[in-house]
Every structure is written in C-alpha cells, then in structure tokens.
Image (cartoon, rainbow, N blue to C red; front, top):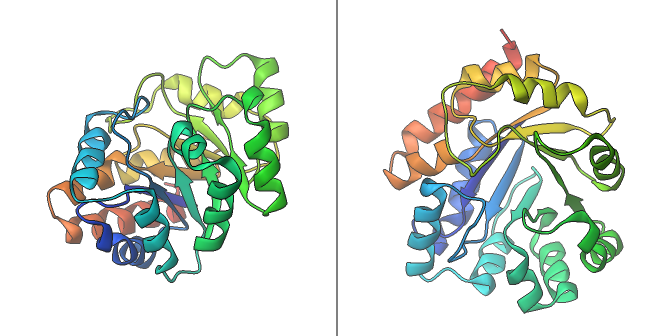
Length: 242
C-alpha cells in the first residue's frame, strides 16, 4: 500500500481536488492532506516552506474543509496537522467537519495518546480513525499501548527528527518494523523518497510506505509530471517488492 502526503493549499487552495486526483491516478491508496501551520514542529524544511506558501495563498481551516468537500475520490483521505488547530476550532466541531468533508482519519503528531481522550471519543462516535505514531525510541510497553489504541493504521516513524527525504533506510527502521507486533497495518514514513526505499520497507514487513517531502518538493517546483511519475514508480516498486 502507498500513502502520499501533500500540504493542502500549496500552490493554492483551489488546487486541492486536482492534486488528490493526480495522486490517486498515479497509484496512491491513501492521501494525507496537511493543514498548513505557521510553526510545524515535526516537519522539515520542505514541508515548512510548503506550509508558508499555502498560508500566504490564503489557506485556512475553513478553506481546507471546503476544498476537501469538493474532492471526489474513492480512496481514504487523512487529516494531518497539529492539535492547537483542532483545539482552537473545538474538538467536536473539528471532528464533525472532518467527517462531513470526507476525511476518514486523523494524524496529530503533537498529541500524545494519553491526552487524546476527547478527540478519540469524538472520532469513535463519527467513525473516524485516530492514527498514532511510534518512533524508534518508543519503549516496548508504550508500543503495546499505542497499537491497542490506534485505528486505521499505526504510523511508524522511520527515524528520529523531522520529516525530509533521505537516501538510506536505517537499520533502526527495520528493527522498529519488527518490534511492532500488531494486526493493525503498519505504515512507515519520514524519509522515504525513492521507489527502492518504498519497496524496502514493504520487504521488511511494513504494510504501507508513506511518501511526503519528496512529493512536496516536486509540487514546489511545479513538476506535476515528475510527481505523477514518482508516485507511479513507487506503487510499481511496492507491487514488485524486489
């Protein structure tokens, strides 16, 4: 399975539906849509720059949901963003807006599982997945708790630090895939940028590869042909796994 990410509103808010269509046409099985934030603490330079461009283009929470509502697709759409945007709008209202617009799951990197109770309750009522993250330094007992609570999939952070494309897949990533014992699909992100890396995480036991910064870089350059090619090649590499 291939999961793709882009920052909604880059290069402009109206681009969201056609960007989703491009990614799905190229082979994405799930699309994460980032809600741009002025202080994206878990994101590297590429996504930080994309967030700034989207904000300058007028993207905001209202437009985010409006544009997603105009998106027609059969693949799951997942919100990715920071908790203060949810808190400011109101947990119940935000969850309802997700469900009404067509979003099926949420990833909130800065919301610890222990503090996610109100959002988890709202998501459960609205049949939304709340997807938790596991990092290479997450203790074993914490991993057990996270995989019991996550839904949709569990997001395995390939390396410590912020998002960003890299050329090698660290041994600790493969070790993490092996250490996370669960029937919930395991998706690996942070640093995957080539078809070979996507295939490697699947060969290592993951159920999905997540590509983000590499997509964002191509969007920043206006290279949508290259974006479609990259996603297509990643999907083909995952199919082959060799």
